[in-house]
Length: 433
Image 1: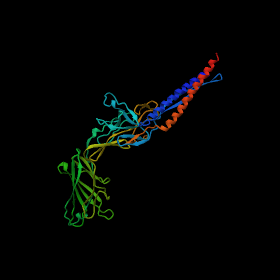
Image 2: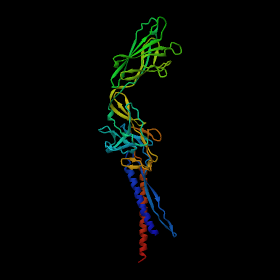
Image 3: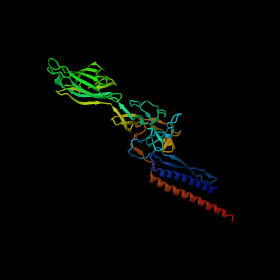
Image 4: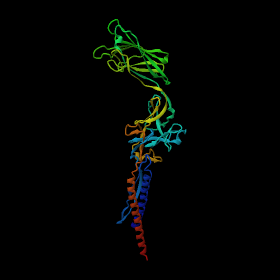
């Protein structure tokens, strides 16, 4: 009984070391596979104990585990949609074969890295058929609310649908100096004109034509101007008129003292803004706060536009996309503006080592991993999303080769035990001769 238990135990030793050899060979074979996570074999003893004073060998068994929570180092690339994660978390992906199939939600898998490029339909996918999933942005670039405890709000990321777009102007900032001498008695009262370009809802160039008219008193200085704004898209109609008084005192001389609207939206002294209704929609015009040297000033004898700013841009073609550290996918246009088109959330589970491992370095949720949750990249427990980067294999070739030597020796030792048991059984058989 004791001799046979030794034989069984050694056979079990051969089996578990063969299993360990399989994990080592898999790790070494994938030492160049991006995003690969190591597989390990753990041994557990089987104890039969002593029976009637004689010890019976129990043996050993092996369980294999993939160490998903230990990733490889990151390397840079030249593709903006090569994605990796600087820390914890997974990218949501689906199979390319499932995209376009009607009848139910997409099957969602998770991966830690991928080289995504647009296919003929503009869908970002890898060469192995993994399609990146994200939350589409609203037309104004904001991300709507989406469920965090399920994948219902995710859809394949497409970039070709946003190839041609414009960005209307909604804000204009005026930074200029008006001549104080123009409001003194005896001045000509001639107005000063300024044209500010803006872009309407169709990306067409329009202009706000500004006229600054000084109030000339009979004596002294009025320090007062009338600002008129005309919209070229409305046929030159006046969309706003404001009376602006400047402070002549020593402490804050030349800054705005008060703004009185004649027509147009009210002036907000807390923000220095008023709103005019152009043909394409409202535009916020910033002229500065009372007492502030920013915006409009009245100093010296020169008319000097020093800083005219605005948002918006003409219609442009999509020239590229980039992903920022918060998981926002931005479309970049050749006209000089960017627009947020998707958010790529990161998936997290309580026990990543309990995930089900699939092909192509992908994983699925299991009862052992716990339920999934979608985080914004850089929030909570998940890391930043990094573009122009890939995650290398987690295999340490030197360490695997060291384990290979140990496994070979252990396998040989078990084979030697079997050989010894065979010789002992042979000796027992020879007793009958």
